[in-house]
Image (cartoon, rainbow, N blue to C red; front, side):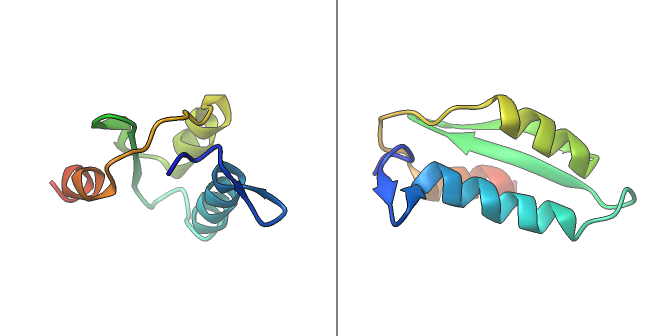
Length: 79
């Protein structure tokens, strides 16, 4: 289902961004993080590096209307 879909008192996208923000807040500058996004196919949007780059990239992103393939995105993230 689309991340733009309404979920509770926001969209799935809003809830997902809050979860990422919470996870990133628990990291230090010495930690590493990457961001894998997906629509029709997974893409490494932010390669492994400083966690602050994730929030910068995420703030510029918008959800799509199409369904994504979570299993493919997880495979990409784990490789």
